[in-house]
Image (spheres, rainbow, N blue to C red):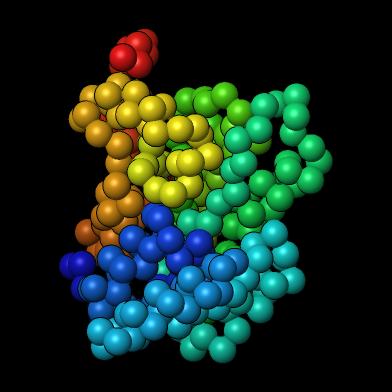
Length: 253
């Protein structure tokens, strides 16, 4: 049931970190992957690597803050089975220092792009009579807070609202909409949150005793896209090593 042969999977922010892990996970299971990223060079390098292994892959450049560019992203695709909106923008910025430009790009990339991607994918999904929309949300916003990420938290809370509403509207077309809420995941983007010392303190406070790996999120995405989750829609799956379980936070020793 985790065989995606003959399926096409598009992943935004697919050139590194969590996105790359998602791309590789679907590719290993037979999917044709479309890697959509702002960094075309990194996306192409990943696509080339997969192609050398005999796996179908292509790279497409897109700035997800540009609604017009999103409209053209899915051009020439004959089919699309899984749309994964993973890309995110989250510069660590104290609330009093957030500018209109920072807030706008955060909302455009994290939330508004999800609307435009879904609208662009719907004609393909309707023609096929089925489709999957998956979103990398976050525990930050829907569950917890982190200093300096109020703009990001607001965007991810909006993402979760979208997931529920879109799932209800699109169910008659055979389209499922779900998301994953990662906790602290060890990726290059974690550098936004501080130095290595902070990362280790956070890891020590996680009940499972480690930061998450990108593959942990990719595994959840595979499940949600598969027939194993065929009766699941409008939901988000928390993947955080148990970090949100304690009623009160333990000290970061």
